[in-house]
Image (tube, rainbow, N blue to C red):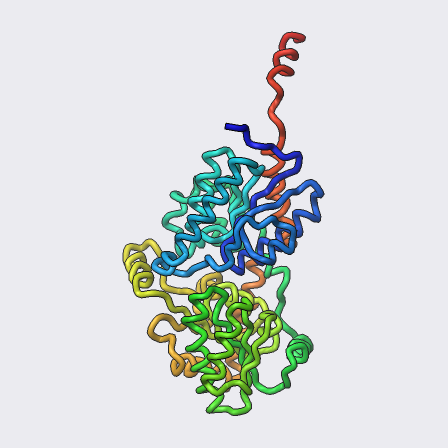
Length: 409
């Protein structure tokens, strides 16, 4: 069997498994390429990473899931992605692998890579709100953990991992929107100055299919109560556009709902957001947009979560990232059976009616930015990754040279 090829470049494997990982991976790739001309990037991801200069071995943007039974659907594709990485790593071993989110898949991939001498860096590591009790079991998958939330650093360090707090890139990118920025965002989206609600059903296919219909049901009820109310719905991926347009038309909301591509502009422009738990809720918090968070998973998943809470493996059933970061319920959460149009509309109506209530939530959300900010998150992450890669890339002393040096001494 031929020996693996060592590249004269610093070779970095970057692996992501959904849209938010693709975004983070693309930002990281640009930072790495700006810092080092000799960086060669390859891995798993999507079009954003490809545009940033990563050779994509397999497109994995559609493989992100929330839940247990939900993961079964993408398991065959994940197995194929794993096989692709194994084949490429055997032929061209990287100097470091950067594993972005996609918790369980990257715990397995990280363990496999480390057994073959490839150091691994976990960027957006397994979420401690879910996996805290298993952190020690997961820790051997990672040489270094780059943390973005204060809770993560404590948990992974206690589990025995080398950790570096790099902050969250969104903390650098997003700040509470001023009145001027709000007006500019509305103008960019072609919207007027009336009351506006943003609807964000998520970026994963199963999220969109579960949550877009109920968010639009809530929008219809709110619009019936206030015909002046308008809605803006960012479409995370173009492949969802036709499905969402059909849902909008089916509820008679074609004149009231604008579909757009820029989620940050939609959140800046909105008076209130109704959204899926996840990255979007963090973006809304950093932009100072009041929100109602919704979350619905399969019955098997929620059963496992409730059992884990009873066994003290998970702290609580809190799902909204702002609430998790702040350790208190600042934004309303609706889960499982409560994720229905009428209940979402009932939770949204008081916030739409009261500017004072929206301002109180906005003030509380301001603390999220302070907790996630480290200053130059992308740069900090790139520096930590290159440090690991450089340690790996230093060639071992040639045996003949070592023998000669010993004879001379």
